[in-house]
Length: 296
Image (cartoon, rainbow, N blue to C red):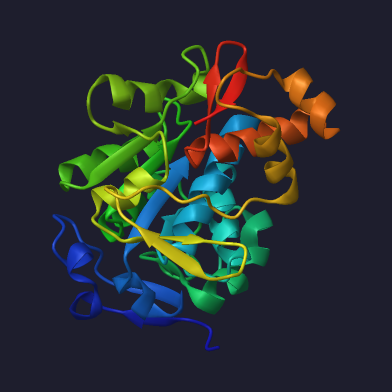
């Protein structure tokens, strides 16, 4: 793979070419063609809670398995979790930098550059040796918003790059989703405010992202094949891991079971149960009922 290439506005996707302040050029490591893919931005805090980390992984896993390219900023926290899920699934992801390609920030993420470029692209409007100057990060967010059909915000403080990206997406007429956060969690105040002010849709299931974009949803099953369903069809049970299957089978639709009761029935730890339950809630398979959980 060549080191990197430079492309100019004539080669940009239309969504980037026609924003009010398009970059004069882009340096690209990887495949420039992925800039034309159907893409969704996944952004959020650099310091996510366990819940935020799980949501980033679940949402990014779902998107990447449904042939959606994930766009983010290579930052610590939500950004890198989103990129890594795409890498894990061997699907494209686009990292938009706030520095030059020969001055990766944060340096600890330099090791992921070649993996991202293998199927996707690492891009920047800054010269190769340009350092990561503070104003570069909010500036590059317009590129993240422009390349994406929708933006998903996961646990973002009020004064954060993720909120800037969301506001830019709104101005561009793009869909914005926010994962609801605890009302007293500092890192979720910005995303909750987006919901309060009507600038974002509450994201209760990752299916809602693709449904809003009229993208056909493909759900992987245990045989490695796919089943297709739309919003008007009955949702089919997706492939579950062994732990998730054990939890699902111990639940009923008539009476709720607490974490302790599930643990006693499955011999799984509370942490293992919470991680699995979070995934199954997002898949609309189970729901909270009182102090416990039931099948839907």
